[in-house]
Image (cartoon, rainbow, N blue to C red; front, side, top):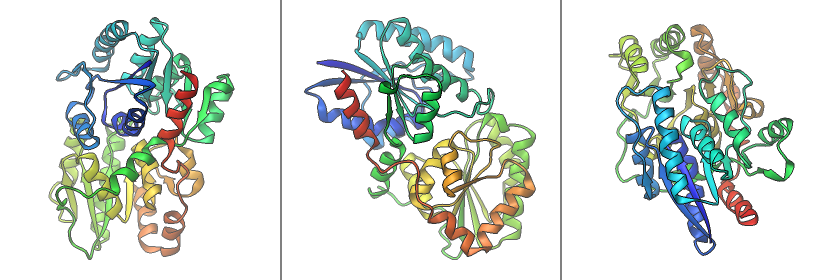
Length: 367
């Protein structure tokens, strides 16, 4: 029997690996799958594990208060290397572009253990945008053996980097699997937010490091303008716990009756809130993938995106952090029904909900 160790540390990784872990559990006669978490994001990670009923076999519990990236990376490299040396897996499975991904791939490389990289091939070709994710995923790509590309464009990027064709698998994105599994399950309790049925919900998420400072204040002022000028909308913003996000958000937007600033939501609550939203403003990579599945037009508050498929399909539009542009593009979708319909009906370019099955089938054929 082959042994796989699946390693992750953050909520987005857990969401996108959950369908793979669940699919692997259907093949226990051929593969043993051990789940290891670094707990890079403790509370939000645990919520996802609870929703998908996944119990880690190893919890490294590495995150500490006020811990910077260098400290986390150094601690994680030592801990993950030690864990892999003891378990001696036949394959290590990682997802995405976090520090945990990069560290795990490096630790496995030092031990000559092959790595499977889920969501491989995403690139902006900009060293610091997004930071530090672009370098994390590039390093993971160099160190991985099996590359599970979510889109044809991602697969092409891997070929351009001379990855052997037989090691590239075009699977679709597991985020679609996870989202469909979630919205088809009822919530245990109703989410009481934006209950006024006469107002259209604009769902907002913004938290990227590269926007901290003036760009972040600009997008906050844009949200205030939208709320002031459009009385039939309710902006709902689950605010990230990072002080670089919370401080300007509450200073510039706190107290407005048409802006609901709430604490971060559990994954399943957020998924159901997305399904109720009229449109979405975000700088999140994952939401750019999820929103098209639900038919929600998305304005991306970033200068670049590693997911151009959504832009090309017409489900999303890059607006950056310029105050005037965010307001103009939002009001266009609020007032122009045909423009809204074109984006809402464009369809998802990210998969059909069977990505995890394709990934596991590829592993069954290789291990």
